[in-house]
Amino acid sequence: MGAFRVVSRGMSFLRTAILARILSPEQFGTYGIGLLVLALLEVFTETGINVFLVQQKGKIDKYVNTSWVISIVRGVLISLLTLLSIPLVTSFFREPGAQSILIVISMVPVFRGFINPGIVLFQKDLRFSMDFLLQTARFGVDTVVAIMVARATESELALAWGLMAGVVTEVVLSHAMVSLRPRLSFDAKKARQIIGTGKWVTGAGIFDWSSQNADDAVVGRFLGTSSLGFYQMAYKLSTLPIREITQVVGRVTLPVYVKIANKARLKCAFIKTLASVTLLSGLASVAIFLFAETLVSVILGPGWEPAVPVVRVLALFGFIRAVIGVFYALFLATKKERWVTLVTMVELVGLLATVVPLTARFGIIGAAYAAIVSAVVTVPFVVYFYTQSFDE
Image: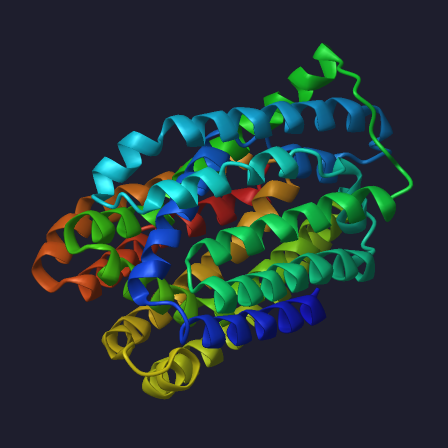
């Protein structure tokens, strides 16, 4: 998993460096609007299938068919909602150019719904080398297609077509690489089991997505697509290395925690994980803060200077989020999904209470300040829930 993150983010930095010299900040902002809508709809219709399947102690064969049908139906629903949202979105952001992006992006969830749920076995059975191959292929195709189309058209649609190509690649490989293949068969009883666990994952996803994107919405609405482009690129640049650390750790530790039955062993494993992530993300955060100007200059190129102070502020935000994120895998592994939901809800409340006044006062750097506030207010809740984890 670490190898995949290094390879994929290496490609991501390369893609960003190339595309930032072909496309303007405004074009990145327009594409960001499309991603914002897609992510919103995906989060609000999240089923928690993957978490449910990983949590199961035995085989997952009996759940695969129903999981696949649910995913397909969800994908079609998201696509229709994306198309219906076009007038509202273009009016809210005052950006008619977002219509073309939304039309192309609306096809992504349809294809994504056909991904074989059986690929969760790579995570569940700790076969991360297979996951590496699948995800690297997907990301590689996304990167190559986006760059080729951008060079040919100089349009922000290149980013959307890259995303589409990557998803199609993942669909094909998910069925080719896994022997457990789903059929179009639906079991209402199993669907209720999946959704019963998934409701908390859905809630957590909604609050988490909202807390990570409300600042984007405020910046795009009040400061324009150009400022949104600066802010989103600064966010990605400052939090990417730190976020990758926690994503690798979270993806690996969740199935491992599920397999550990002894509470003393589980607590010891968690403390070691927390210490490692705190050290690694702390070092990454300090490096990003100190070399923000160099990173922006080298990776994004000339014209992106306004992103530098935002990168520095968000480096601290990324560190706090990295440490908090370590606790989520523990809560999910011990089937305390509701705790994750409550923590992410507190984070959203903290952001909503501060993002508008701080953005109005300080501009895009004010939105970054609000992000830090939202992360800090969750710390007492995370610590309290952790103390309860081993008492029950």
